[in-house]
Length: 149
Image 1 (cartoon, rainbow, N blue to C red):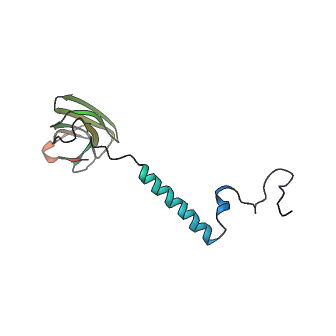
Image 2 (cartoon, rainbow, N blue to C red):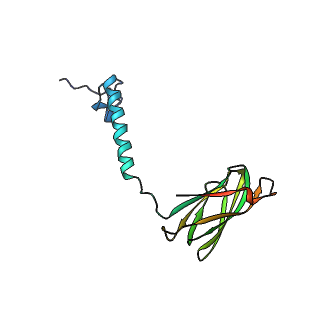
Image 3 (tube, rainbow, N blue to C red):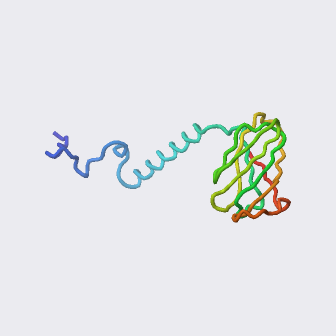
């Protein structure tokens, strides 16, 4: 009949399309179909993305210059965890006061993320000490700590 027989070695000929591409004709319509599949995938990914964490916060030292380490004090809420995208982070929490040390392997802007127990608490971040990439202390008064969500 009209059915295409596979070659004796079991492979399909190059003109035979299978799977997802069978639904789309060759040419411009196929490209539009593939774009539509990509858009639907992106929409589904957006709808299934995790909601923003109301307990998550962040601190970035300003100005964002190449530094090696900093000691920052957070006051106003119990901090439950601290992480950093670059380097290492250490913290000590006592009540609503937490001291955070951020250390980079290579000098760069200093920042860290943290979680609080109470999302409605108002926080104050103070830069207590800063060291450059050579471990020389810098004037902490020249720095600020930008709080973010």
